[in-house]
Image (cartoon, rainbow, N blue to C red; front, side, top):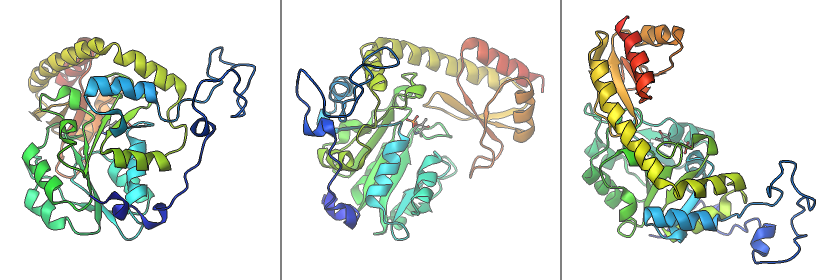
Length: 346
Ligand SMILES: *Cc1c(COP(=O)(O)O)cnc(C)c1O
């Protein structure tokens, strides 16, 4: 695929900012090139130095865990940053479009809107699966990015891999598969398909299974060409040194992540049973993620009654195809019990 033809014309000959660490990245005795504070840091550590702009150590470790080559990895300040960078790189405001499949993650729409880019919505079917014929019909030339969230937020289900592959085969632009919940999903990640589809972009994050939402670290896997291009337009030092260091530590401790994922999966089925025993609960949807979509009578009222008891869930009842639905993150056993005990009094 010709990425440079897909790129917005004014970026095709961009001269990126060249940071001090771009111009010199080797070993030296004395660093007087970046206007850092040579006397040290007010936080009492080595944070007076700018971070590695390309996060080489961290990418090396991620490559080992994910089986994706380093040059195919891009890291962002959360997944939100790569979502925005992709739209900015490929969609001309007022001309090009992204395609999304509501109900889904709200950031695709917001990011498109911020960038003045049209969002073509092709709703999921009533089973929360992709309406493939409708999507294929809408894959016109102006669609530069297709956002597919699987497992999908807020519905919780994963989308059929064959539908995703059909879109990958037909799309003229890039197909972004947001796998924020991949660790909870028994299905295979599309990261293993990067060699097959040059237009494939996979997003994952440290915010969910790794328990590092506060760190703001999102991963993008794609062709080395796309990663090189994003490196040119990203803010030079977009991942802070503490984020890089803490994530390295987390990756060395992947067994702890696996144990938490196991606990969450076990609690997910406990919570499902407890919810189904509540009179106000009409349906609990299947989930491959760390949350459950729950259909109740009078969602607004239940949301507020829970809030009065200090319990916050997400009211998703005004989204397309989600009438009556609350989204509930799987909590600890104590939290789940308190939630369902409160629900059963309503
Ligand atoms: C939570 C979530 C993310 C994570 O976003 P970060 O910016 O990495 O915290 C991404 N996509 C979806 C669908 C999510 O639900």
